[in-house]
Length: 195
Image (cartoon, rainbow, N blue to C red):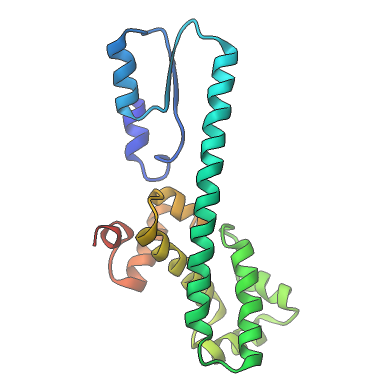
């Protein structure tokens, strides 16, 4: 029951689950796996087997992360190319530097205009003026748009769960992610993925 509940929650459905139980019948094992557990170990269990299973699960996650990182890099590059088309060289260099900082810190929910201004060694007002002059939006909205653009690409081109996409795009809650995505694109992330 708990496994099913976790699998239905967008915030936690990406977590690996290992069930260790005294219920060891084949039906119990199958029910646990059917509910969404990656591993079902019967008691008494062998501690070394548990550690091995954990290590293998983590290795699989690492392989997936590498694949997702490549997809994320493609998403960011595509967005970068679209944005910098037609810009003057000095504007392009400026935006590339901004985007590099955002890309390196995008998973941080705390990423904001102040951090970006510090990185660029300018005041928030000056940074807002420059970004707004090039993109038409202020720094805060530019960061949010970069997060949403990445999320849109990942929803379309990967099988990542909503929780994983939310995390790699730096949104601190599913409701905020869904609300801002709908505000920008007119549909929720789930609706966008289905379409």
